[in-house]
Length: 330
Image 1 (tube, rainbow, N blue to C red):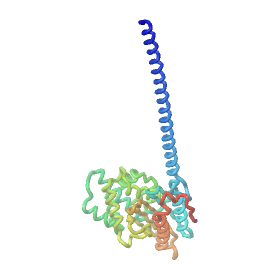
Image 2 (image 1 turned 60 degrees about the vertical axis):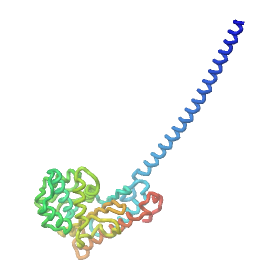
Image 3 (image 1 turned 120 degrees about the vertical axis):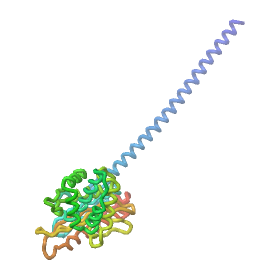
Image 4 (image 1 turned 180 degrees about the horizontal axis):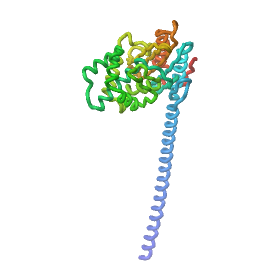
């Protein structure tokens, strides 16, 4: 009986081992199946993420439409603005340069961006920028006299005030500001002739972007100070790229005009903010000095371009990403 009991016990133990092995095998198979499902799910999520990243990359990839580039989802806007800049220039005498940049959509348009023009009074925005940077470096505040001269220089385009601040800041500090702003195409006027500074629409756009975005050159207080003055330019100095600015959008502008043997130099630069907008425009020109191509002729050219561009950048149908596949006219 003892041997039989021992044998029965052994059989029972073996049965238990087999049963246990079967359970382990079942558990292992179940775990492997679950792991496979998790891996498949992870791969699916990874693929979805990859597809999303690819789609985002495709949407942000720059495309060129004529004079303008923009992310692919704003192709229609680029095409329209490019066509409208051409429309504004069509048939106009003289030489012109146009730069447009919109932070909201990523639109960037350039025509003759590196061509030099006599700056006339748009250099006053550079003078003030250099003055503000100088005070930042010396950790000093603008004096009451400097504030008074800066107000006259920007809001009323007063030439005496510009000369006084040009002389005070000095060529070294003016050039230092240009270097910091990476405005390498700008050539300062010599012998006190600030109006003969050679400007390009490319560099003027760098200046406008500097004034309207966070950077290491001008702090928030300096930028706000200059933009405030540019937003309060007196009515007789508020022409140019401000044309067509819609209600709710604030313009910040500086214009310049200068007649000489070459003709009329007419320039206008401006930044536009508020109502969800954040765009900039610079138009520089020189027109033949005759009875037809006078100061008003140059201003009209700039304002014709500005109205078209302003309309496009404030057209929700064009600025919406869904407008990417909309067919645009010429």
